[in-house]
Image: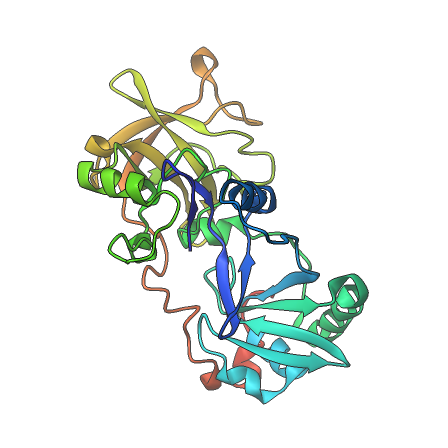
Length: 317
């Protein structure tokens, strides 16, 4: 879902989990919504208590994730459909497991209740269950999320971007016809009617391999040039080993967002790169996005078809 401000800007794009009929969790991206919620409550004159719940998430992602989770929780994990959830108890630890993630692979998120007490013990249980499957601990896999067109708050989406600019098939997340009001509804109606001035597009980029985005190869947005002027910025980019090319997401004027539009992109100073005139200008072309698996068939895969051997093959979890 999107949380928007009064101008329609995206404050956060959390996953909304419905645990019970009237009990919801927001699994937030990288921005402070706690202070925003307190400000909204104060402005609205609400007498409520707002605080972060004692819950901690961890992700198990990749082609081996189902086999690992089956070992950890039992065969009922196969019944969790894409974007559904189920409660479990692991060695006395209460958890909620959702079939979601930030990779475009088959994957799960484990939300441990009473995290201040049980998170470390759960972590050890997950690591132990992962040993037969070659589990490795990493941060977010930005190559996979860029390949899958998944957006990073603070890079591809910020409070200065709107849902209609980032597109990506998220239009269903903005219901402007609903009776209920929400912050930013009037602004988004106007933006939709007028049309967004910018759009987030997929790019294929030339030049030397860019790296993995979070390895120091992209410490800031890359300027996008068209006919001698800077017209936009590449917000996330990486080298895709599967596609064997550089790919990225870029905010550009709507008039220049058509497939096949060509740009020059300044990829900046990188070790070993040739930098004529102090810049590394490479060719770039607008291409369809997501770059891989646009219909999300991989994360939606029927895990019941994965036997022990096939579930343990492929890349690491």
